[in-house]
Length: 308
Ligand SMILES: C[S@@+](CC[C@H](N)C(=O)[O-])C[C@H]1O[C@@H](n2cnc3c(N)ncnc32)[C@H](O)[C@@H]1O
Image (cartoon, rainbow, N blue to C red; front, side):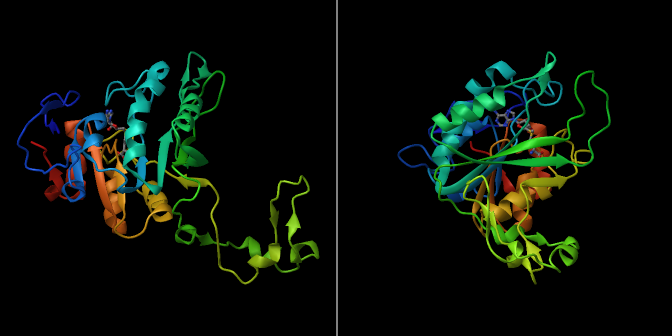
């Protein structure tokens, strides 16, 4: 079993083998799940993930370091090497995820040398080759992005939240994220046309169709795949913290009470906070000692895990 210890240099955790550890391990070197639950574990996720038993996680939700971004705060990964760097991590994520589980990857390619880099597109293709299904792309619209001027594009106001699964049948609780129908319905649903009263199949033969009359008398509707949420980094001690509503939305959509959520790049611990608020269990991994301590403070100091 590998040992992931605290290090003075937050970017270089000490990783070494220790024969007698306070956590038990099975014949494959995995820790019992209960030893890892509700913990923020410091280390490189590539070293920590092998501790997690196979097929025990219901949802993986994470925002890995961006390519060539924030080198001064928590380091970046070279865009040209991003796919090579991420694939071994993704293989471990695939192992620990339940067959019914989901993996949400928040990521956005920067513009480098005047054009958007293609590594996210390449990553999607490689993840599919690794056996993942690419189910959906949710768009996080960042409502409060700063104004700016660029010579050949406008300011970035959205990020991808890519949804991958191991199977086409997976756990999804759509009712948990329903939204109010809104006032438009009073006007739109008052005088239904004949077409509105029956299933109106798509004219292009896609197999899709709608029956507007199904929504009369309803207060709630299913949401779209666009999440309109402001960023919340200023008071978190982390330059790329999620707004807590972002992990909460996906956690509600893909898990039930007491299910297990893994964030292998947990930063300031927002995914763990969301889990606590929703009564889910979490496993958080973070390389940087300072961010680990911020995350641990946010979720309560008793959740520290030191694997030595
Ligand atoms: C985009 S941030 C995540 C922010 C997080 N969602 C939050 O709400 O605070 C990515 C994090 O991954 C951490 N990180 C980078 N490489 C890592 C690795 N190999 N293993 C674990 N964490 C890593 C960075 O220190 C950084 O805090």
